[in-house]
Image (cartoon, rainbow, N blue to C red; front, side, top):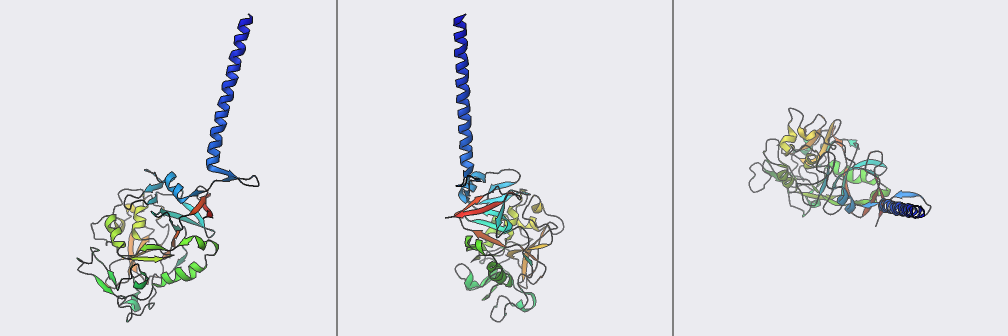
Length: 347
């Protein structure tokens, strides 16, 4: 009987030891998880551990279905948010913005979630056609060159509106000329609007924006060709707009493969489906010109579901500013609308 009681005690001790080891392992795992995601401030407050843009890419850029951060299949080392409502909200300038892309250089391309203004892309008479020879109809319709050529990367001597092929050597309908002044919307965004961004302006960096002419609505091209056409001209600045291929790539519908499909002016395009960047109301300006005989046409995105065009003097276009945030920022938050990412540190 004594031997039985002794064995029973040994078994109970082993069970207690096993339970204690299990609890230690559980607490260790919990602490490891806690320490990876949270910090304790000097005042004892638990705060979420910030992440870098590199860590955001490493942790999130793996979505293959529905909303999320996807590997960009068109441009290497780039990640793009796709879907109807991904967790890409970021607080900037005390406003809600949304992250469009994580760029290959680590910068974040962001867009304001609501329109900042409604105005013409280029006001009539903004540029004198005598000195801006490309803008020969500027006094009547405005002009679709985003910036003066000396403000473009490599400072080309003239601006060339390519159509329909986007290749200067084979275009039969190209028109070109000098541009010595910026579009009126460019001037507004990079002076008055930028000046109103106070404390967090230090996080904005100059970056290249592709401002060339993508294919037109009759082309049988794909997004890669449209990207290459947009990249024929690059403007380096701080505040711009989305280009056409930005919005073609933010849908999770794989059937959206070209500007021609996005155009689809007769009915709602598949490119507008499951696309968080598509405007809910009105017509939104892009930075992309389109081929028009007046050299004033600019692509807009219509809330009705198509990409369309109008003269740059159209006064009812909504303006959604786009800018790039420096690569060494750190973010807290979850990226949701109620708990957006917040910039908390920058080296």
